[in-house]
Image (cartoon, rainbow, N blue to C red):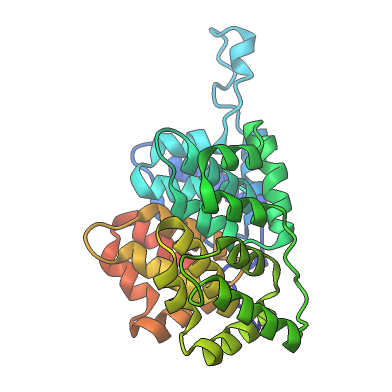
Length: 332
């Protein structure tokens, strides 16, 4: 949608051997040189970071040929993640580990984490699934199975219920129209159907909202929302506010906001993660790491426009130490 800008692009003078040596040096001896790790990982694309991870694993053999050890132990290759987990801690460690996964692998780990244990973190499911393209949904389903040996649809079906389940299952079909065609007659029909399903009746017919919001292309939806407003005198988000509640309301509002501007949706999520007491660092990591090669530069612009404060300054006052330095470096 429009012209979106990343903050991280492939590093032009990429030298994987130099990088793994520098990371190795940063982790050796007393103390860790966190800044060296930040300088490298926050300035390499996800594909380059995966190369670094692979090369590190192939080159370094940490129980290096100690004659007193059985041969099998000498084959103990070291995973870069394990090395860094030993050296780093807290949110800084979490963010660095997130950067060592391919973005879709990291996303499915977050989906699984949101469903594991007691209760479900629906916000995470909504954020990841409601903003994904058809191709991403397909990749998530395949990757989820590869990483967790579980079926994403079955897990979501088992972990959610009612209208929320119906909506997420509908999104998981990955059947949204992704063209840029706008059919005015369809928009009028949809706007009338949404009105009839919500404000125009007692109670709400969620299946109509779910069908339209999960299938129509973004420009088509924008046209529908305009007609809806002239039809009912209410902005679609206000109508959703008064007609629905809980997670379903969050889902619908996310889908509407993404149809209008995904980047503004992410700017709002970042702001919400920093507002009030405490900071939701997991959300900061997820959005800043996952969007860095897609549209983070544009999200920064939207943030400034909406909140009259730069994202950089907001993070500066909310986060500390190496974690803050890493996020600011990813923002460039």
